[in-house]
Image (cartoon, rainbow, N blue to C red; front, side):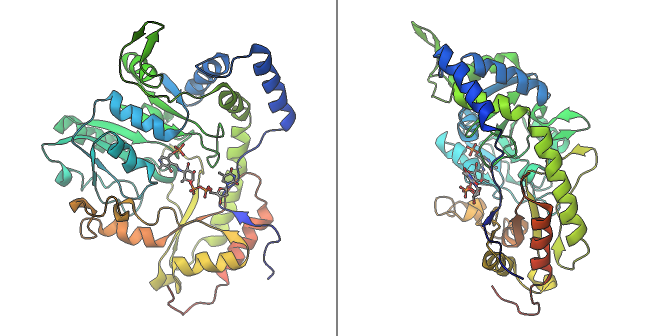
Length: 379
Ligand code: T4K
């Protein structure tokens, strides 16, 4: 089989018709209002809180700032328990708040923080649990809340991957004290760069809105030490346009995921993404797990083989955050503390998934994977 002529990346941003963007830009040009929470910003905040079924939502310039501000708004300090199987932003937002990340192992099925192992990580310094709905699969939100209530901890969700995810029809952003979502170009819904903090409290919304705008109340009053986390008008306009296309993006992805599932099911050593009951999934990523022992070759070998065919899959999330040089000295970073995450980090591979990817390309990617010569245990 011949390699793809054009590279196939793990994702491509959804792009609306250029004319629609030009029309929106004309509106912004006419208003001469570019940032500092203008008209497009207000429209998008309202539209997204309806779409995501959350009572309160504050837009941000990206999810990382959103999480940093959320930690500050909740006045977190000391230690926060989190997962090592995530993007760098998750532990970094703690460090930027002078909080020590404490890594807890993950669940082998959902790959989210293992609720059976959280309690053993709690110390008198623990103030919160920062859990990630990794790849859009919801955490065990009920159990996390029970633990948090029992020990008097806050709960913050990194919902960067979870646009549109619902549990029993309830928006994912309504769980915990706050959740933060990413609208980065690599996400199924995007504002080029962007993010949001979501929660159920009016009072918290006001604090978060101050914090994202330098703490400015009015021209003569700065009420808290805020930061600049504002989403600008062009990002918000992009978000408004993309909102009209996101359902179609999601259904295209669902169709492609069904093809992946049909082609890759029942292959020994290849575990397909988990689908939880009563959960509306978003197909943000299609991440398979490859067991070298059972599949015959390693995840890294498959990754390299795909590259030979011009397919750029990604090893999300390898290395684990606990293995970064800035975190590996923490006692919670030891492989003994993180046995499941250590294995999963070497097994996961995100395969290309985005609305514009053709069905034919998905079938070809599956064909490449299925035809990799086995029996050679290569790393
Ligand atoms: N928490 C979690 C759990 C996260 O995963 C993330 C971000 C955050 C927090 C923080 O959210 P933000 O502050 O970013 O809003 C990408 C994204 O940059 C990052 O947002 C995302 N997670 C992470 C999982 O993926 P990289 O380093 O993999 O991106 P990059 O540049 O290698 O792009 C991946 C592929 O996408 C490329 O191979 C090609 C394609 N691509 C990318 C861009 C930027 C395009 O086709 N066009 C583009 O414009 O981090």
